Length: 265
Image 1 (cartoon, rainbow, N blue to C red):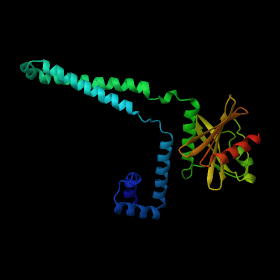
Image 2: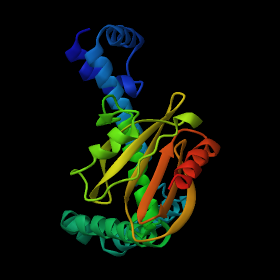
Image 3: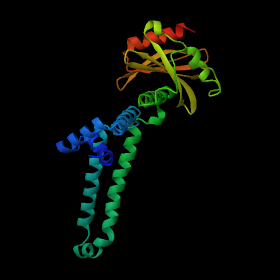
């Protein structure tokens, strides 16, 4: 199997749709081809990002039941109207009016669907601003884990990382290193959240990465914890800055670096 075939079958492989022979051939090619390994990693990260930032909701059972009721009512109405018309007139006008009844049934179903969605399905636009930002933060964190996306400046020296942001942002993010406490600064990058460029500092503990997003905020808020898709997040505002820390680290360890960041100010 060559690279073209591998790329073509990548989605089927990720969705477990290939037969055993193709799976073996594709996996053998992945083991030997760095380019296709990269493509496979990118697809995995992209799928994880989409799942993390998903804006979809599962509709309740009540919605399906009401649609079925509306459909049955429309069918019953069509049957009553049809039986009330003389046979000759039914035959003569059947094709002229059949579409009217179909349209009426469809309209009834659509009306019930729209009404029910408005009543029982939560609108994403009504979510809190923090909830929307949390989705963006998590998506940015997952995207950073893709190969060659983690850092723009790779350095364990805070005096190298901090000046790197000069001229790239209209503010200066605070940068500290906590390597003595097993939270090593490994670099930083520019990211994009809330329709603006923001600073992202990257720390590492064992094999886990922590993204710390920083941008200006006029508000003051105490740390608030959240967990999504197996990742932990902490958000707070302090000293005129917005902070979001996110990692697959457990909540206790993530809280530890948050306390050290706050204590270093």
